[in-house]
Length: 117
Length: 111
Picture 1 (cartoon, rainbow over the protein chains, first blue to last red):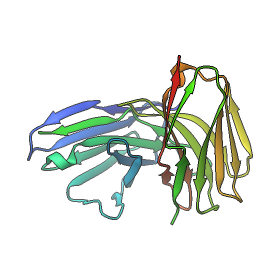
Picture 2 (picture 1 turned 90 degrees about the horizontal axis):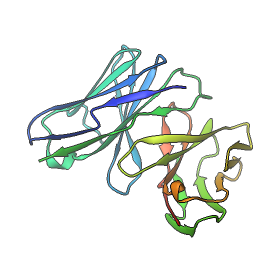
Picture 3 (picture 1 turned 30 degrees about the vertical axis):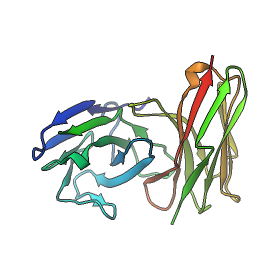
């Protein structure tokens, strides 16, 4: 089955530093990857959609200069939280789909717990 | 704008009980609906995927139904077990490639 690997699973960083989170599709080529954010006891909120080889599409209210997304290959997308602050502390989850067909479901990564101190 | 709501927000049941989780969505023009399970501090595990043309899907003790016209889906869990304790999320895939998630139901099955 489709597997998405997300790394790291947790990270603690100092305020003002940048953190990179990787999302890899292990056994399929992901034409589209998505990045979600989840605050405690809340549901997932989509941050951005990335397509291989093109710029990411950000949801309203998401700062594209703060959350840099790169989808350089069909198996890897990265999310970089730049100049992180405590309010960026959250659970970040990526998902990937192997094709643009609307009939496919999505496979999710295991998530990354980011804590900014 | 598509909105997805799940009821109840939390549920606590004794082991062995059959239970139903509800998901409603405001725009019936969906491609598919997916039910996920999320354990605390973990990512999402896909449980069932229902295409817009389907009425239900089954996997083991789980059965999900879809009534697109009324904007509703239910997840039925038979003979619940403590290991079923988790948060259950439904998500609908609409006009774009993204999923819109529901608010989730936190389930606790008591031994």
